[in-house]
Image (cartoon, rainbow, N blue to C red):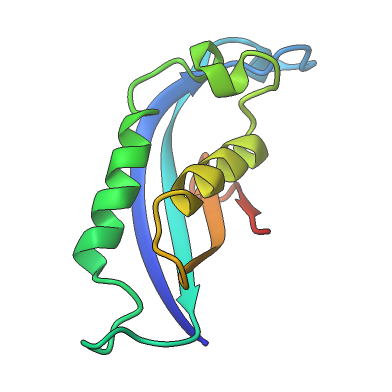
Length: 121
């Protein structure tokens, strides 16, 4: 099994509904995102996927969230935009973009330098 790892990030605000604490108030993060892709075989060039293409896909997905109030996005109108839920939504969006034979193994999202959550199927 081969794996690729790409890191990126975006800035966005959110608030956690029904949370007992300061995070119930609107606040922002500079989110860091790590994406791990895997494949059992390599393409004719010896790659799982061109890093340029991976970074483009990740960038296009993150652009949908960058400088937004996450609670206002369709994905988070009924569920809290927690780091855990954000990791799952990003995983789903990226999985829809990669070619057959390539799997999004894991998406990890950090809301701060020391706090993050990951999602994998």
